[in-house]
Image (cartoon, rainbow, N blue to C red; front, side):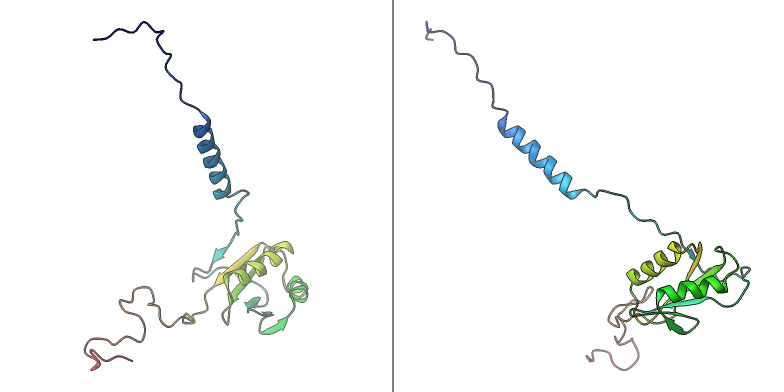
Length: 160
């Protein structure tokens, strides 16, 4: 065992600079990855199939990618709002919206925003009953994609 007469060395303290750098990078990452602002909420009633009180003339707005139509007559949004104003007794009267011919969700939301901005408060969205445009996907409840052969149809192992 050796003894040293030198002064004992003080233990070195670790540098905090790398830890501060890592914390700063994490802070920047989470700031960029987070979403600022509020999500938009679209109030919407879905058609339930139950008979509700409906009064006045029919007010069916078909939403297509390129145009809107009221009861089958194509018109621009301003004319549509003016016509709906004449057809309704109050702003709470039901207006039925239906997406057609491949209209996207954005088309539906844009039409709803225009109608809500004009003061119409009772918008109801109904389904079209059309098959989805993507024929390769299975419908909910299907076990195989459309176009696939079914057992017992004489096409087992056959490929299109």
